Amino acid sequence: MLLSASGAILSIMTEWDDFRPLDPWIMVLDKMTCETPAYPSSSVEAMVVLAMLGALLFHRPQHPDMARWETDADRLLREDDIAIPLRIDIGNVLVHWHYWKGDLAAATRVTDILTQLIEHAGSVTLPRLQSVMNHAIHGWHTAEFDRCLDLVADGLAMATERGIHIMDDRLMAQSIYASLSQDDLPTAKRFLGQMKPVLQGGRRLAISHYYYLSSNYYLIAGDLEMALQHGQIAVEINQEVAAPFPEGLACLTLAQIHFEMGELERATDLLAKVRQYAQDIRSRTLELMYELISAWFELQCQNDQAAISHLRRGLKLQRKMGFLNIPGWRSSIMKPLLLKALDNNIEVAFVQKLIYKRGLLTDAPPQASEVWPWPVKIYTLGRFSLIIDGQPLQFNGKAQQKPLELLKALIALGGREVSKDQLIDALWPDAEGDKAQRALDTTLHRFRKLIGHEQVIQLQDRKLSLNTQLCWVDIWAMERLLGQIEEFPHQAPDGCEQVLKLQQHLFSLHKGSFLSGDSMPLCIGSYRDRLHNRLLNRLGLLGRHWENQTDWNRALQLYQQMLEMDDRQEAIYQRQMVCYRSLGLIAEAMAVYERCRKTLFTHHGISPSAETEALYQSLR
Image (cartoon, rainbow, N blue to C red; front, side, top):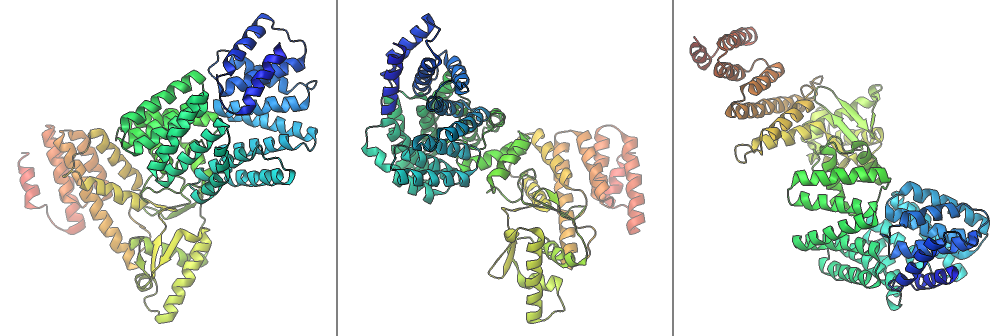
């Protein structure tokens, strides 16, 4: 009876269609294994475990004894007295459960065992195709996309050579996952076209898989109507065949489609359904995707704190799982989420690893997070330093001098769309015509070779620009912060905490003046002066903010930092005197006046202005 019930389950599973007929057989095996826990043989036990694990995986993953069946499967996989083909079948089900559950380490371990078993099994085609698929799944989960595509190509070639095509659609699906994860729509479209014949068959789970993948394709492509149509079909079929995990994945995609169409209530209802599935199934994979997509929804709705909470939980979970990729990855939402994580100190090391491994280039403004693992970081404030792929570039010898001068001049002239003529005038003012042009071309070639990134400086229409997807420059980050301060009179900041954070960020960037050790070319000194004056002006606005909040001590601290940057600014002394007067610290205010008077006389040979004198007299 154990073998009969197991055979019935395996027969239903083979159809890859309606899983509801599994229910009575699951009940039978539940009852029999409870009443008679001892098996006639290990082979019989293996057949029962294979049947139950497969049935529960696709149809009842929330079963209370799922963990027990998983443990039994893991044990039987290692038992040498069980036939290798049966162990391979158990392993293939078990490895899928580990991916759905969200345990990469366990999935990898089982895949390695299966590889060894298949070597002992000889040249039997179907197990080898299953092994190719397992390794391909591992490839796209670990962001080894090229490896995944190569494996699928090998698997399909093997299937064609040996005339066994039962695995074709599942192999093609892995290439679609890999392609969509890289936003490679042409490759995904090609494999979807090859997979489309499954729609003519009666295997509804395969059909729903096609529609799930195609809905993701259309979502990334921006065709929301087609995405909605295919997404709804995927959800409906999975409901019909009673496959909870595939339904959960389809609901996640459909939620995003509704959100993009402005249907927030429908989108959040679908997410809530996925969250319940994740809890019932105990699937960390669904839980992770729920957290990340919820973070995106909240971020788009400008609910920053809620977004950060979801992001913190999601990325912590993903780090523990070991996944570097997930089903339905969309770079358009993941890159902003990862940037948000770095800006809020969330799982920084893991996020940097994720970005680096996937080769992600941010679409955010070029002055965005310093913590993003930029291929090239350029520091110019108080020092000149280049960090290339995480390592400081060592400057050796005169041979590197001119290429670095080119970089400095390019930054000083704005860093974007700087004409060749401007750079030639700055660096080769005495050179003529073709000679100057050749000097610039040679220097640009030497710089690219020195940095190791050909596209770090782009040339178009005789204009040079730093590549904002490859480069982070400290002064660009500072310029962004100064621009935010400029908005204060027109758009009140959200609160003192935001202002303080902005102020702290400014001072963390400002290690000194722009390229302080360079006097030539002249454009460097000119930009240095403009930046210095702008910085003091905007810091003065922050100081007035603290005064308006009657936070005199915070204002005093800021003004003192400004004087340490430039002690010749009479207006700053005046503000310090006002703050001390407001605190009733008259002696301290008069001491500030004395410092101001001595400094002005020492640097300029002048006395304080009438305004400063009047302020001083008000203290007496």
